[in-house]
Amino acid sequence: MTSSPARFSSELLLKRAGKNPIFFFDFDGTLTSIVETPDKVEFKRITKFVLEELSENYPVGIISGRKLDELKKFVGVRGVFYSGNHGVEIKGPGLKFVEPNSAKSVGYITSLSRQIERVLRPYGALIESKKYSVSVHYRTVKPHLVQKLLFDLDALVRQPLKEGKVKLLRGKKVVEVKAPVDWNKGKALELILRKIGKRGKPIFFGDDLTDEFGFEKVNALGGISVFVGRLRRTTAAKYRIDSPAALVGELAKFLFLLS
Ligand SMILES: [Mg+2]
Image (tube, rainbow, N blue to C red; front, side, top):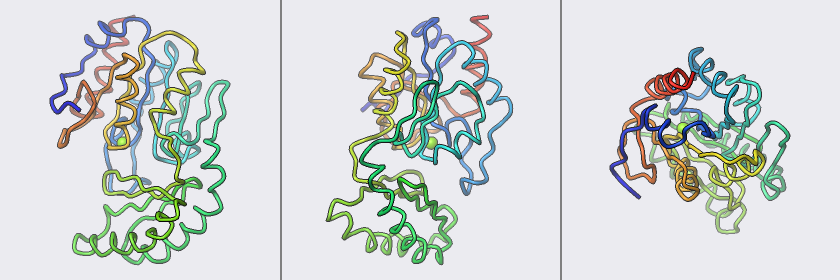
């Protein structure tokens, strides 16, 4: 882990990846600003335009914690690899994948998600049932209730955790309950790379704890790892950029430099 990543720029991208970049992005907080609840997200037209331009020339993958279909609907760029549920489901040119053990857990996760919903919704939490996982978003919960909510969540998942039926994943004001599989954004990235089968420099942009798997993977592959946002923790990312808007600006500049 390094705590002082260097500044990311279009010049750096050009120098390190040249004409062979392979782009991977997280979605929320990376291509969009963080909002109060996931349904309020705003995917800007300029961001879509830049992604369309990138995908005309280079492979592009978007790997999110959201449900795949929802992610695809939000982004709406053709010819891109989409991955939802932190890499568990992937769809893209010539690729359709669901991590096999997650597929087996759908029934169990669905019934657990109903229980979680019943107990935690009264707190004002947003419970998002995502087939292979369930997210408990507590950004909208009053601060004095958060500890109690996390305590109740803990009580709900204690037994399933002990029995190895679920795994927890923490992010920004969200806890995800998912199938107990050893699968993550880094592994999804690697699978997509194999499918693309082209030589190039993988670059991963992300902002949350779950993106560390992506950073570590591209580091191991000799690629470029970029943290987006203000850094308040240690990260495996080697580079950093201030905001989603600044990132889109640098990508546009990169396209300009190459045109
Ligand atoms: Mg994110």
